[in-house]
Image 1: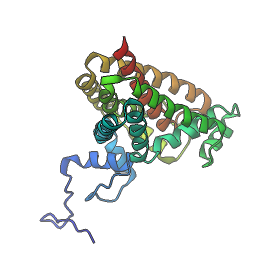
Image 2 (image 1 turned 135 degrees about the vertical axis):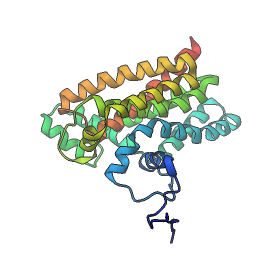
Image 3 (image 1 turned 45 degrees about the vertical axis):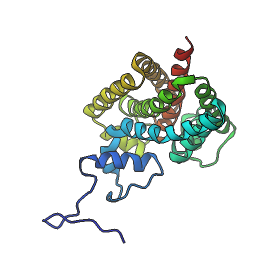
Length: 263
């Protein structure tokens, strides 16, 4: 059994120290084992939210060796496909599940309460399946067309996708009582949003220079329009719609980098 070294007062020492929220963000957003963290709680996840963009950077960094191997052995299309497959595995399909549930509900054209029920249904409908297939194809296609900038797209997209999550959490109401979505909406503070935005701006410029900032601007625009649509449709956002914002934000970031590479 794993043990932790105690402090002098007898309380367990967290070996992550000040980076514990980053470890919590990675534990929540990926399947990666985060050894040494205390048990996950709603409070610990909320405290980790400002670290989501940095967790996205870690995800992107883990995908770079996969891309280099794929490009060296098979070329751009296989490189892109391998990266997207491993991307989905590393994140446990967390946001893909939210994407499918969101589009099953949003495209049902049913009353609001029925849409929320559809979103809670674990079964995938036709529109949800179509959304997943379309998104994965777009990720592969745009990434394959990014050329030498593929690595910038892979690093930047997970950052901006998770910033889109936080934009939705902070700027739109929660659709239903209870659940993690309501907890996020109620407890995320203005300073959390400002911190993540500054981090996203800095990372966008460091990774992609002006192209990165344009990608962030486009992700912001898409997140705002989608948030407005889903707020009208559902009465607010949910944990599933946060996942959908992340996935769509990633696609837009990759598409922007690829487009500017060819312009």
